[in-house]
Length: 267
Image (cartoon, rainbow, N blue to C red; front, side, top):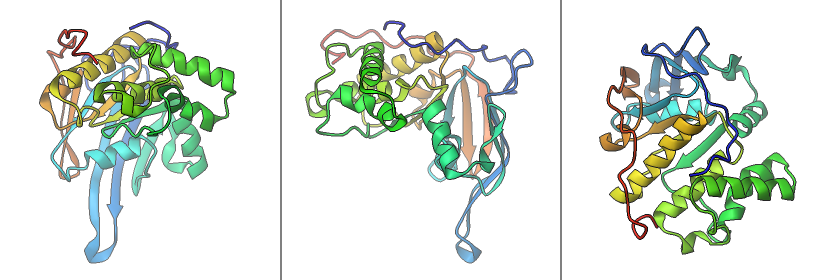
């Protein structure tokens, strides 16, 4: 993988799970965050008074059983939903107080998203799929084209720019999705079950790519997964149970490299 991305390397995570390193405030801070759906007898409390700090440059795996609140927490962290109570600070700004348009601008500027189902436009080339966030941002065609080419090269897809999703393997499609997530040079990539639709070899390939983006470019990675062998790549594991953070611990022995694959396996 080349080094075209310009996101600076951030302060390394401290040994303590405090969201701070060397006195630097956390990139993300949740304080007393709760989320309610419905009302009365139908009310569901999906999150219950969550406190969570995430420092810039961390790689965090968010885990938990179905209904534990991990996906709700991820939606709030990604500014796709808002808390019913509590505070969400991103770079010191109170996200819970922002308007819908302001949250959308925050997403476009600072956040990138990778989904289990890839979410690529079927009849659109890899290049055009990756350009989409820049199109929404209003960048010129020349800027979009150059940035998308750099992002595709960063994920190992130089030369595949004009292929449609139907002409790509599952692993390649997820690489395109990751290129789309990083083309805006975000501070944070939020990955929701990014290996859920891939076989074991391609899953490790994608995890190696996320690891490299975190390690080499300082991009903060927040990943929801139910797979322990994928979570093992993260340096920190946060487990949700019944709407609360049950455990939050440093991974003392993270996987530091994806298993080597042959050229035929990698595509």
